[in-house]
Image (cartoon, rainbow, N blue to C red; front, side):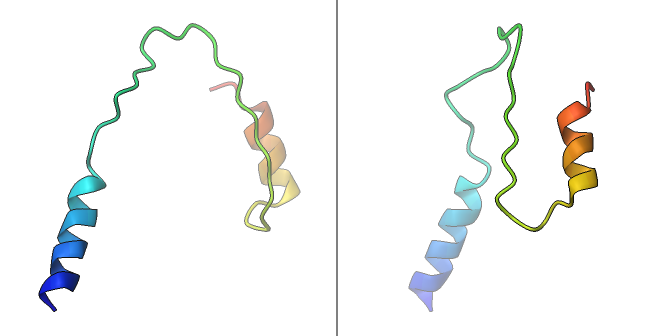
Amino acid sequence: MKKYLLVMISLFSLSFAGTPFTVTEIDELYVVLVNDTKLLNEKTEKILKTDDA
């Protein structure tokens, strides 16, 4: 039980860890959307591909 609790606390604390990468100096970004799941239907996929926000 102690090992399980230790693992859960470790995973929880690592989920809030920062990354060594920043994106503050990126002027443009080319995003690629590949839908390999059935979670998105065609209408939602089209909205995500054309959204300029």
